[in-house]
Image (cartoon, rainbow, N blue to C red; front, side, top):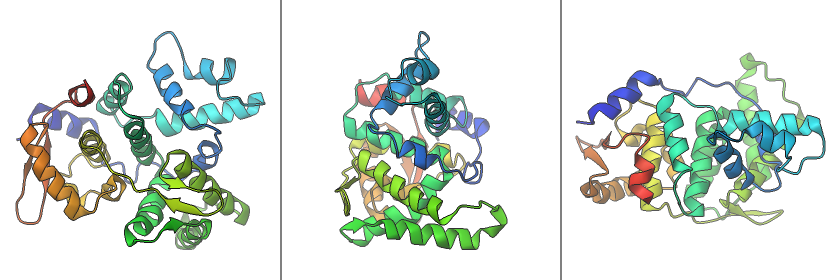
Length: 275
């Protein structure tokens, strides 16, 4: 079960949980005035007659004042959204941005893509944002993120990250800004959670991002990306059971596991869902 596409991705990729190091690209991405420009950047990347450099550095569509800031933003955006684990990953993103999908689904795609490529963003989101979101609390504070980062640094001295108090505070602010611009938080000084309802189409796309994160992991409930689905494990199990009858993926339920087998290629799935 699972077909040729599962075989391809297993050969092309490895588990990326430890692939990327920690960096502060969140500060650059979270500082963008309008996160929707990222959509234009990604689309430009896949158009043969345009490039990210032309869009950012030459035409300055991101409205940046200095050449230095343009170079910094271009590098951060490319690293955050345009690095891929393999051809299947690149095919997935290319074809997603050739379909006409709702804005909320596009925002979820940016969110999952950044979670794959930026380890710090992924771990803050899993260990702080998602935990508090599912706890029933109304909102997320800068202090929540600061406390996590300080604890992380205390336990990770061997990484020699050398982040100052100022860097930690900036990371916390920019993280909240980014999540607000993605419409997952609302408010200015006090950030409240928006209730996110993952659409059927976005949930199936999530299975592909989860597979990219851990290609050998069939049991979706064991995948570390699960908190990023905006669904509790028991809820995702019930939704997937209902969706599996549509033939967009196959599943097995041995014991407490929910084993997922993808039936569309990474280049085909977005068209199957949205076209």
